[in-house]
Image 1 (tube, rainbow, N blue to C red):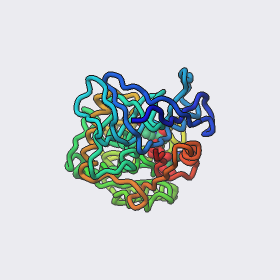
Image 2 (image 1 turned 90 degrees about the horizontal axis):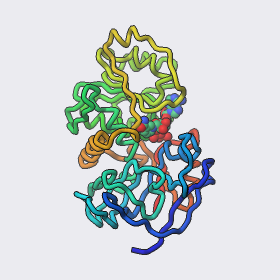
Image 3 (image 1 turned 30 degrees about the vertical axis):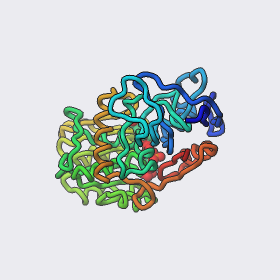
Image 4 (image 1 turned 135 degrees about the horizontal axis):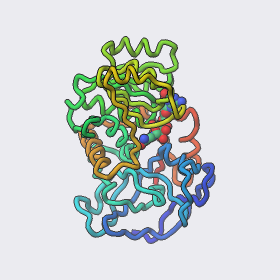
Length: 339
Ligand SMILES: NC(=O)c1ccc[n+]([C@@H]2O[C@H](COP(=O)([O-])OP(=O)(O)OC[C@H]3O[C@@H](n4cnc5c(N)ncnc54)[C@H](OP(=O)(O)O)[C@@H]3O)[C@@H](O)[C@H]2O)c1
């Protein structure tokens, strides 16, 4: 292994141009850690929001190496690491700030690293991370937070997935593998992609009769609704919910509040859940990661234009362009760095 590697880092919050690529020594591995040679580093909305300073947290001394997700090969293993080996291909998810995956070599806690099955590319592995784990968490049973890695887990259920981004993409693919009828609702430009991802139906969320169309597809209502924009959709979610339905909220796109009827909520015995993956305890994230690995092994998770999630791959030197693309209004797909 060489001594030095390339690292992207920022020391102030701001636009994409605050990120600089530097040479520095390859990090040492500590107990319960591994060093991964990164092939692809995945970019999420969380990464661009953190870089812009939206987290309202102080800048750590030494700055931030961005990105929580990646895929690559383990090159060093620390003490007290079980089940992982040098040379093993892995996917990396939710590694904490300030040390992320936008580097040739990244240190990651071993508990945030999982083997990448032979049938899965590094493009796919680096796209998973927080979006796929969030998708799995949104599909867990509300009563006991269990997510069953089973093709019957959602059999007979109808799931409505709101939004057309990476989380929605993996929610569609996981829900379908679990046996659900999957209906997606997103902006018109994403509808074909959601069908390619595996949705049984895709409905234009901007059309005037969207609720009527959704009701026509599932007259008995939706058992689970996974929502990117509750401020926009919550009234409709409650109207369209089946008896004892769950609404799982994973983002606040489009607003922070909504005026809703508790009468219908109560009459339907509904459950509202909200998920912020990065704050959850490791054991809950691990359950979700295990479900993602199960779906990977089944070949049910896919990315790329043909599967509905176009990839936009940039070199490490072009990381500012990658961030600018990922945060642009009309962005669709997954931005990755190739290392
Ligand atoms: N809770 C968590 O732990 C967690 C984890 C991952 C992501 N997130 C958040 O979830 C959101 C999506 O993440 P992603 O990775 O899927 O991002 P993405 O791939 O960039 O997709 C963003 C999607 O958000 C939808 N959207 C944006 N503005 C909207 C609005 N005003 N009304 C309705 N939909 C809107 C769009 O759906 P249309 O196609 O319908 O326009 C778009 O496809 C981000 O806010 C992200 O920060 C949260």
